[in-house]
Image (cartoon, rainbow, N blue to C red):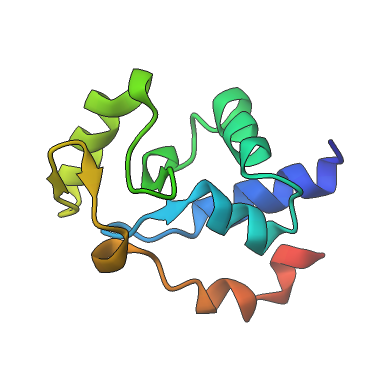
Length: 106
């Protein structure tokens, strides 16, 4: 992966505000990444300092091995799950500010 794409993914995830979530696909689309899986890889390998818990699967579910911790962190920010699923309709981040910030795409 190109360092530029890696950093763009990191910058976009860093801008997700508390109380909001995005899908791996949302981040991939914004970053110009070829696949949502690439976003997951970046977060797994280099996302400990990011609000990784705000990134979910498209259906609003966390990765199985992260579910308890991720939902706990989201709950602390006011994002409530119904069982193991967060309502993407209710909590999905409106990424307009990302699209308006040219520094993310340098």
